[in-house]
Image (cartoon, rainbow, N blue to C red):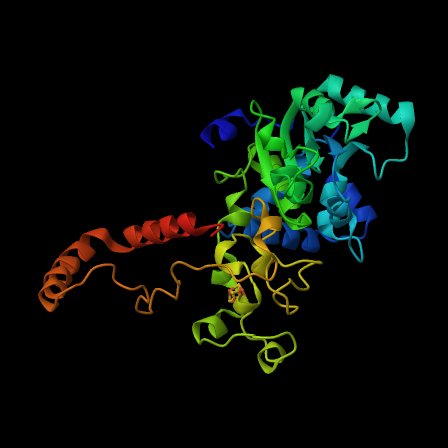
Length: 381
Ligand code: SF4
């Protein structure tokens, strides 16, 4: 991770200021709305209050950032997510200031003209490479070719001069549906192939465009990629367990579960754990950021989380109950774990006394570290 942060390069090498103020004015977005957007993105990135104005300043000064967007084995759902909005939002406009020089699904040019645009951008270098879809390696890569080149060749060629690579959606990050057993095309994710570049993984089926926006804004503001976990996922989006932020959590703790679709518990909004919800093993910001401009998310609409940000989530079984080794009630609750060995009353007295002394030294920081470590152990079951 340190290596990735150190090797992140500035976007400022490209010519032409974005002139965000003019774009905002043309689109009828007031300065107040723009500042509110910057504050919301600061919140999404888990930055302290007050960073909104720093983000606004950085975006106003940002140069146009060329983007090459490649699609391989995908359903174009992440592109849909990128484009989909019922009305132009400020986030869209910030994304508009990017110069999307190559995107097969949305670009007007086709054939040689499209390829020419891509090569022109690649020659200049310093662009952002966004990849959607898995890369098939079996049988010489014949299962996905564009303009006579295999997906693998296209990816490696485009990554060579990119400033950074962002893999969007579950297919580009971890192989997704194309990689599901028996994986006939030998599909892999971007990070399986690119080892010499910073790669950010934004999994999800599809990508949540808020997280793409926040990642780009972070890069434009701080000239580096956001901090990531060992799966290359930004911590601001994948640092917290869904189960811990879920609005149905109170029902889980109270033992109130939906047992059948449409039953009384389902109508009352009880916990979906027994219907296969993967919230206890999945780390994603769906409960807080939500989808469709913050309208809702799967659990709010009555379906359990399917764990789409987890590697190989297709193999988990959408309706199979996940095995929770240790329940995780709030810290104020007594532990429900069973003791592994017999503990005598005397032991309890001694341990209690020592814990009282040690507790003074360890304090809240130790508790937080222990809880974080417990979380890390359990992701993915
Ligand atoms: Fe929410 Fe699912 Fe956890 Fe129940 S199991 S509290 S529905 S995340």
